Length: 455
Image 1 (cartoon, rainbow, N blue to C red):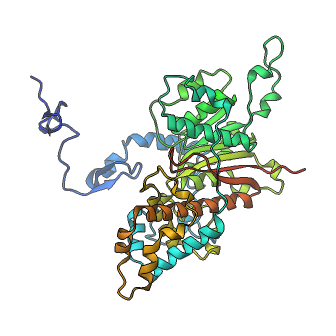
Image 2: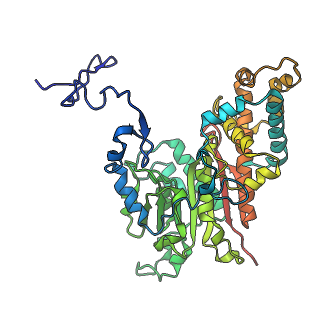
């Protein structure tokens, strides 16, 4: 009988069925880890290796070949969209020695817990004040165009795995783009002559290319292709996924598809040969945390902001933001906005940490629409006047879920308003809307913008 791994699986009430390693009674998955030091792989921090084996591992890491191939691409430029650590334009590479590249959630939490009670209460009051003055006009805009009926009614490719809530989110993103004039319908059947032949290439210029950032499996692009007749798409995604929409997209004879496996931080979009000089739309569904800022900087870098806005290749964008708790000061697109409000880097990171509270509570009610957010924070106000101040950690622990959630939504809106203002400063006609009800997704902010037209 073939030897089996000796690791007992209590839930299955049997031993592991894998074959053991030649020098161990366990398989590779269940071999006890060595007590030696484990360090993240420098090529792919998602896995770790023994410190003693690191030198040999980096020579055969599966990501090595991909990294070497990517570095040879003309559109790869390390850290081009990373931004600067401070508002004076100091590059990240010039940060002080030992400066952490990313401020983790644990570091943000510890910094908040380290505040004194007066400092904590002062920060909460400033958040409330900024929100009251800056975030009053974020309207609901759940728009589903009839162009998306093929998906809404389930008439699309049945082999594509998806959930109804994602279909509604995608449909509303496209519906808002169409309503704002960012996206137009293009049907090849309307662009053919009597003999059924497509008309000349001039009409093709009416359809801009679409660049989907953080594309994942590419289902937003699939809906665009099925419902709006786009002709050229570029999918930007750093990870590899199964069950991608690429196979279905490539079956469309009139569609040109290019997938760029690269981190948005390192993408020089204007060096992509097949896109160079072409007008394009930028889209992204749930660009997590700093990915939104990287995308804005990628599409609207300083070298593309010319005196004549009509020469700017981007025609419009629609970006659904999310995961504000992992935003980083070094990447944030509009540091000047926070600086003008008197909010420093440490306070910005505290605000980003508070945003995680927005998804702690029941999403059946729209907590983001509470008319008087201050009325949901009585505990904090009482603590400010107490002589025997309770530690900030205990104050937070005693807050009700609805108090935490309302504060979290306020912080999300403040962060996205800064991004909205940055787009307007770059002469785009921009709006921030809630594109789906919170019952579909509490992460329901959509930045939508189009190039200004001059008479």
